[in-house]
Length: 319
Image (cartoon, rainbow, N blue to C red; front, top):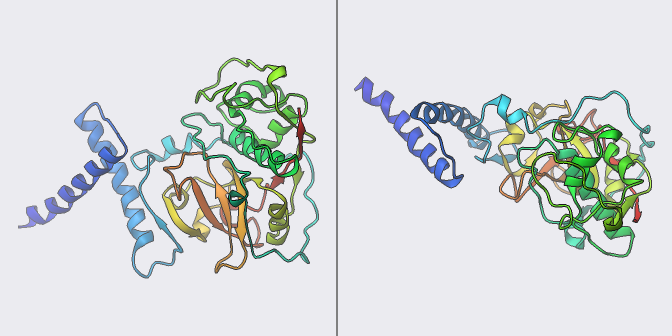
C-alpha cells in the first residue's frame, strides 16, 4: 500500500505534465530529458498551487506557460537588462499634489500596437523603447500608429550603449533614434537574433527628440506621466511570482526590486483596491493576461517588482 500511495501522485503529475507538453508543443529527445523537464515543471506547479490556494495572501492568479519546464538559469536568459548606476538624466521632481484621473488605459485609444514576442533574444529594451515611441507618436503627432521595428534597434544601436541580444536600455535606443528614423517592422522585420544593421534612412518614419525624461518615483508622478502617454519601465521579472503570472494584480514583495527586464506601462487604475499599473510585456500574447500584467501602484520605495525606479517617457517627431 505504501508503494501505491507514493506512486499515485507521481502518476498524477506525469499526466498533468503530458497535458502541458501537448498544450505548449514541447518536445524532448530522451526519457531522461522528459523526466528532468517534468521535475522543473513540478517545481513550478508547486508554486502555482501555493499562489492559487484558498486563503492565499496573493491578489493574482498563477498558471503555467512556456517557461514552466525551464531551469532558473534558462529562464534568466530572457532577463538581460544591464546593471547601471549612471542615469542619462535626473528624475523629475515628484508631483505629490497631482490627483490621478481614476484610471487610464491607452489600449482604448487606438494608440497601442499588438503585443509582440522577443523570443530567445535578450531584446526587451528594444521592444519597450519601440512601444513607447509608437504610442507617443500616435498620441501627439496626429494619430498615426506605426508598427515600428525593434530589430533595427537590436542590430544598429550598439554604438549608443546597447548590446544586441545581450541587453540594453530604452534610453540608449532613444538616443540612437534622435539621429536615425525608426523603420516600420514590415520593412525591417524581427528575426529573434542579432543580424547585420541594414538601416535605410529613406525608410525611417519616426525619430525621438531626446533620450527621454526620467519620471519621479511616486505613484502620482508616474500616473501623471501615464495620463500623457505610455512609458517605459524596468522591473524585476526573475521570481516565480512574475514568471507564472496569469491574471489579477501582483502585490507581493517577493517579486523583488533588482531590475532585469524592460517593459512598457500603458495605463493605471487608481480607484481599484489595490491600485495598479497596466504593464505590457514582450513575451507574446500567450503569457500573462493576453501579454499584460497588473502591478500594484505604490509610492513605497522602489515599488512592487521595482517598477518605480526607471520610469521614462519620450517625445517623438516625424523622421
